[in-house]
Image (cartoon, rainbow, N blue to C red; front, side, top):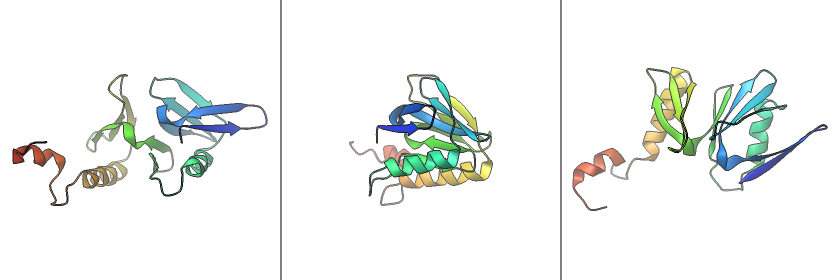
Length: 137
């Protein structure tokens, strides 16, 4: 699922999904932001972008993109920090400046809980607590 092609009447755009940080609704259009900071306005709505990404995801493969509300699709692999109190989601890969995106508290809380649960061990401890066990890695 590295690249997808968006073909309209007037243009053809090839997107490198592995480098996309997020898609954000902009009226009837979608603003694409790459990790490098490069932005591109797409002539498709966010729902259409979501459909194209789903179609490009191989069956049985967990997608790396997550829809957050009506106006945002983020690349989960680039989530660095979730700040519920500041209502900010920070995305990056530690090589470029981070992107801080405003997201509602309920969406951030649900995302935070989901991600924390995915990092939990079978014994109910998070990876943060595993360091206190003094066991070799």
